[in-house]
Image 1: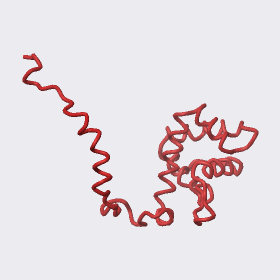
Image 2: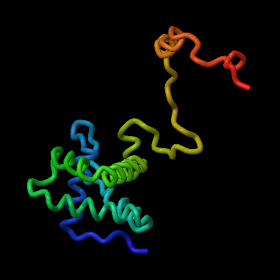
Image 3: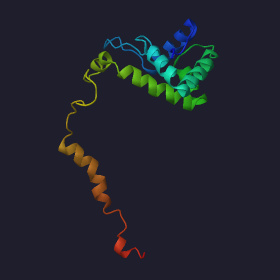
Image 4: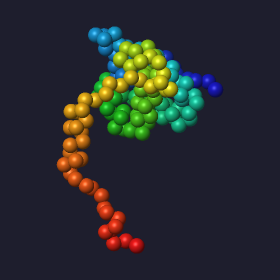
Length: 152
């Protein structure tokens, strides 16, 4: 199955959208999603999932109607006008960006796959855990005793 076909204009538009969704950071030497080619990942996903293919086509068509270009306001308008399609694009964009070992390493997560070994996660302090549990303890028991519920 061939990947999602894009014209150069559509590719530029998608790269611009991706760079708004996951912007780069010059200070930390982290590229944006469009800059590193997450659009290629999205094209592979679209070629294999017709629902995402249709969502991506609708989003690109809508985005091409935005005459002011792609900026944070345009992204908000896309999200508001097409929430389902936008959510799919956002999810797949994150997958495409953070599935790359080079990007995981740049944001401080191990470059190895998440499974089967997982990532090392620092343990929270006892004080922090206590602060999370205290409101629950202060509330007291929050259940119905089945022996006095009056049921059969």
